[in-house]
View 1 (cartoon, rainbow, N blue to C red):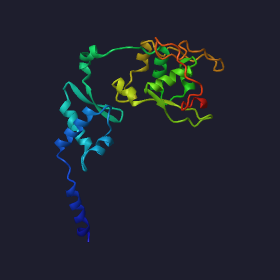
View 2: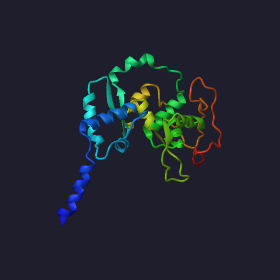
View 3: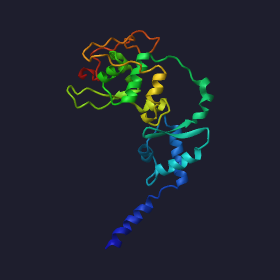
View 4: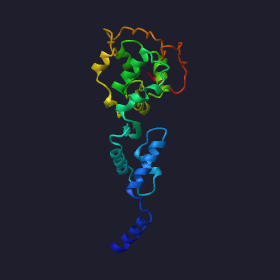
Length: 232
């Protein structure tokens, strides 16, 4: 009885024989090379023929690229082909820096990265100043910050977390790879401390929400849809 049941299954598997592992490796290489952004294993598997093992093919590809000018790098839960870290200086002339983030935006972004998930009220407590509405909204538009889960506290305030685009931009596998807080303070960031006595009104942010140093005031309307700030 069991032999009869197993036989059709064996025939079915033979109809979907996976390509050789070397060919699977080439497929993974082609997808990562042509993809506009990092790809997850699930996305690779969905594109590959039945029976392929993108995880194993990926590991073979990583070994093949070891010591080469480009590497297969992990970005969050996804993978991408990136220039070797020690050769980044070769591309410096191709990089055009047009704007610098304002101090308020840098501090807010750093707090979100190190304390995520974090609410707007918690950001203000850490910085010691009131965060302008436009600062967080513009970081979201830049796609470096996104909304996280709401806190199960009165008012159910939204939280903020960094995105995969943020990790990819700074060459990080995860937020755990960020430099330590001590190094951040030595760079002149996160110097503010919460004011004495939590009841005192926080001073306003001097940057008034401007994200870039050369921008005019960019305050988003209070009724901007989808921000979720009214719950804060």
